[in-house]
Length: 374
Image (cartoon, rainbow, N blue to C red):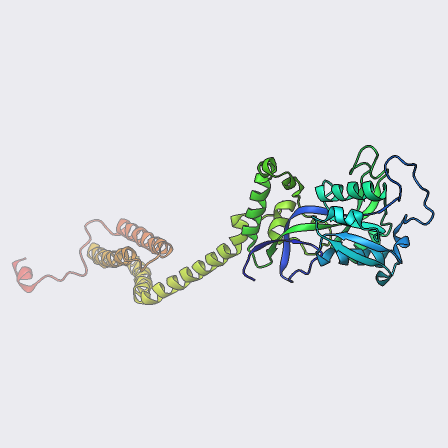
């Protein structure tokens, strides 16, 4: 619980939140038995010798490596091959006890788990061959069934001559199972961090291989099938080409922010209109007053009346423009006001054209003094 990354073998007990970032190496299970003849002596036919997994019942297997995982994998192989595990005795030897393993006469077969180019596996086969005779490699014929029942294992083949060319060890390909050493991460590790680690790991893999040959075994995890542990979503996104960009990750937040800002803007506009409702009402009342004046202009009796209404309308225009400058009147409202104003100007022009030239001003009454002078 104190680490974000770890290395572990896939068949060991993993915490439930562990997920795979990369395969550190693939370990093949190698089972073989000694022929009982050494050197260049002719091969002894099967007879009572161990030639397959079923013959292991009642015998003892020497296991290289003191981890309990190697004992567990042997038990899984025996069960999958129809052999009761309690019928097979085992003895474990450290990786530095290869000669002791080879010289133990009580052992009837051997098991090693490691990469195909493992120096430990090759040394063990060579040592047992030298002490007990040429190896007979035991095929795990139920490898596919075992892999189906236990997703932590995979069905594999050991190529011919992979451990030795002359004589060929093995002479032909051999069915087996494998288990991976994994680079693991917590499920809670962010997708971005896992993806960044994955990219950097494979970017420097070739450089690491120059100083450590085993780094060449680092491979991508298989995202096409169910595995245990499952592949971390960050690594899977890089492998499958589905890694999300910055916009992909945060587009939902952007849209939400836009909606919020739009809502705030609408609320602010409503509040502004509410606070300026008096100015809006004044604009409407001014527009209505001009419409009322239009009908009066059409019946104007003199130029003096026209001038009076024009002065009134000029006052309304001045108030309207001031409201527009203050932001209380919208451009569309001002456009509507302009239409009414244009209608007024047309009415004034039409009425002025119909007034008789030199017509007396009916709204003007002479003073008594001026009348007496006339």
